Length: 147
Image 1 (cartoon, rainbow, N blue to C red):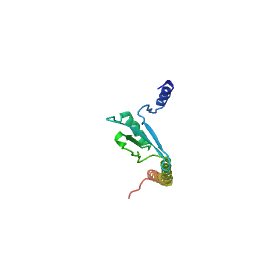
Image 2 (cartoon, rainbow, N blue to C red):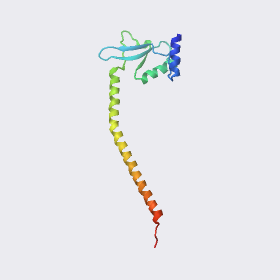
Image 3 (cartoon, rainbow, N blue to C red):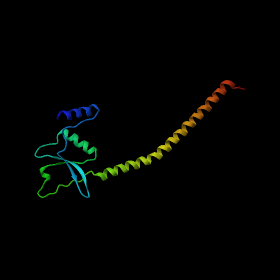
Image 4 (cartoon, helix red, strand yellow):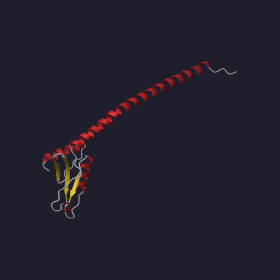
């Protein structure tokens, strides 16, 4: 890493970010056409295993909704086309944004209703408290006459 990269890394870390400089997948794959999208691809061969720093990166990609595939030589049979079951694309993000909007929009009326209920209860409690205090004062001033 050259000095400018190190400086940027230090600044980002000082701001509370975790900066990963290794473990990145071997390839980022973009599929074009009707079912466009992206996926991360890690290539391993022989007894080579996914290293812990690579696992950390894979988790980050998956949390962001980007699928990660580990491809080994046995995955490549003769004339076999590599198929990715899932790729994240713009449509996925648009769908997620729309779902979030719908949830948010359905919550607003509920929040307004519940806040109104709470406000009404607090007002009623305040009125009852005033009434109890007034009755207590009356009892102290007038006293109780027993026969």
